Length: 245
Ligand SMILES: NC(=O)c1ccc[n+]([C@@H]2O[C@H](COP(=O)([O-])OP(=O)(O)OC[C@H]3O[C@@H](n4cnc5c(N)ncnc54)[C@H](OP(=O)(O)O)[C@@H]3O)[C@@H](O)[C@H]2O)c1
Image (cartoon, rainbow, N blue to C red; front, side, top):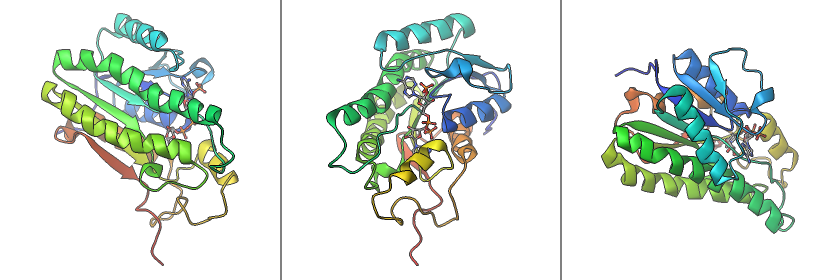
């Protein structure tokens, strides 16, 4: 089985972010037709004309469906989806407000559900496709300054099991990538609000932090035919978690 993605049409939300952008570049290098979405994606420098841009705010379900319609009109089909949206809401549990929680629910939980709900019927109708959701290690190892994001990551770990069962029989695989600490502005922002526990969720057994490309390579695998029997699971890309010493 091959990890080549030549000709596959793959939509990435959050493609103006560190992990989404790295994933867009790796998929394009593997031969995929990549459609990059984000609110500010028009300003994002990909350094290649091979990546199509489709500005989108995932908080608006109508806009998500309209963006997919535009994508299908431009490219004729869709073979894969990567969701990689989130906003920063870091701080102690007692300080974070309803508004902080709601921003994360909108950008990451519903911001994942909406494109998956739009794309899945198209993949199911053609009997093949791959959905990759960027979750996070916080879903099983919640850092003290990151309860909203960690809670959503846990929800996505569960969601993907259900999606795997719901759409697997129709040839559509759904998986989560759960990154640990990855070198990025987001990770730096989380570090800056660390609530007293240096060890928690920022360490890895393989010296880190990891790189956005580490997540991108995992996404490329899950989108490829080499992952044909991988469905409904969460893949940690975290260097193995904190060391025991
Ligand atoms: N970096 C890490 O260490 C790490 C670790 C574990 C998990 N993760 C997860 O991995 C994912 C990507 O992380 P990252 O480091 O790449 O984060 P990032 O650089 O902050 O990127 C987040 C992306 O989400 C997009 N976005 C936010 N709100 C949106 C909205 N309403 N509509 C459309 N797009 C929206 C942003 O684009 P616009 O601002 O242009 O809209 C941006 O492209 C996130 O879900 C994050 O929680 C990251």
